[in-house]
Image 1 (cartoon, rainbow, N blue to C red):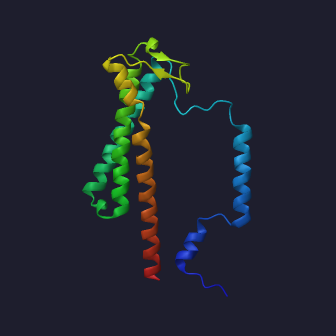
Image 2 (cartoon, one colour):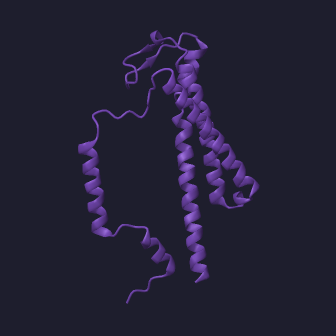
Image 3 (tube, rainbow, N blue to C red):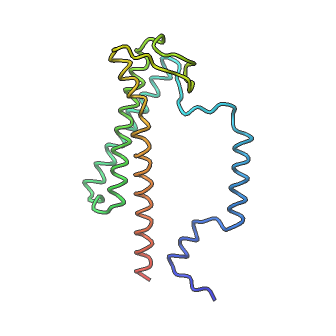
Length: 174
């Protein structure tokens, strides 16, 4: 006889059953591998000027959204719980990432292409830094993943914490 708690029931509701889950993951992976384009870049370059303007406006709107959400969590006292504090931290890191990425795009169009060796947009690119502030700033601003990855991690940990707290409350209320 099964002795399943309400928490186990909720947990199982969100998981894919055994062999079907493995098969589905293998099938999806196969489709992705065989149908994937030849080149998939993590960085998207935009043609001037309208592509860059739209992209920069998106960075500004996302930055404003992250600031409003972080503030909203604070004034509504959600940040008393650990999960919401982590989510608020992720919003602040995403805000910082947007500012760094915005500045990186701004600086990128102002440096001369002669200072970049290798294929544009490729992995073999090297920046020639000759004491120029813009190229040095470009180098550091292209390290924006050092802010984006912790933001994603904080968002994940915050959501996971809220999920665990919800499971504990469900078990306690039973």
